Amino acid sequence: METVAEPSQPAGKVEKPKKADFRQRAHCNPLCDWGDCYPVSPDHVDWSVHFPKFFPSDGKDELLLNTSEYPIQYPQTSVRPECSGKAGCHQVRFLDVGCGFGGLLMALSPKYPNTLMLGMEIREQVTNYVGKRIQAMRQGAEGEPSHHNVSVIRTNAMKFLPNYFRKGQLEKMFFCFPDPHFKRKNARRRIISYGLLSVYAYLMSPGGLLYHATDVKELHQWMDQACEEHPLFARVPQEEIKDDPCVEAVTSETEESKRVKNLGRFGHDVHLSVFRRISPDG
Image (cartoon, rainbow, N blue to C red):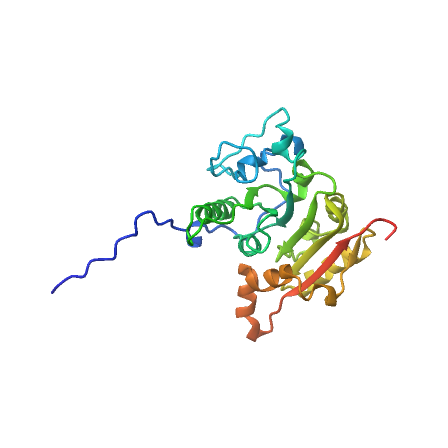
């Protein structure tokens, strides 16, 4: 019998990472003291290593994810102002907190090609996957090189956000399908709470938008209540966000939203709210 040879791999083809190779526990305790490396202040973050196309750099596109496989060493002295975002026009403006496998970042990148976006994820293997996924896209895994405006870092966003970002820097923050932490004693681990919203408000520009989405109705009500009670956030009416491309990305293009839609026949749904960062006087 004549054997048929397997098709050879096209020369120069860039392979995207396989999600199955980076599986990890879904839950991680954000309150534990784990060995994390983080910058002293935003002046100590060299964004050129994460977005080499947007900053003065040596042009290298290497993985620096703050994981054990791809570590970062933050300097003890301030980096050049044009690389830390202190001077010049380039700063991270969109932040996906708990970015998971990076679906939102990948969806928003071509919609806002000149906006720098960062995903923060606490799980090591998941961060490695997103980093390699972005790197593959930058090397042309789907044709033309793309996604130069997105990056990812492993860190604990509940503890270290002010170490990365300046007051009023962020224009959009996303909290998509966070861990619900159902047990009453674990409610303090939830990523949106009245206290944490004060930190987010400090980092957001006036008029900036905070998006939160979940398929857990009780968690949605918790996050809604926290935002409604906070004096620096106001709900954005539905009619104002019906054409917002971020809403479509959050509810339809992330991995979790797709999972929820596949379960829709069993009564699952995506609960989404958007809140605007306002000044204390409204």
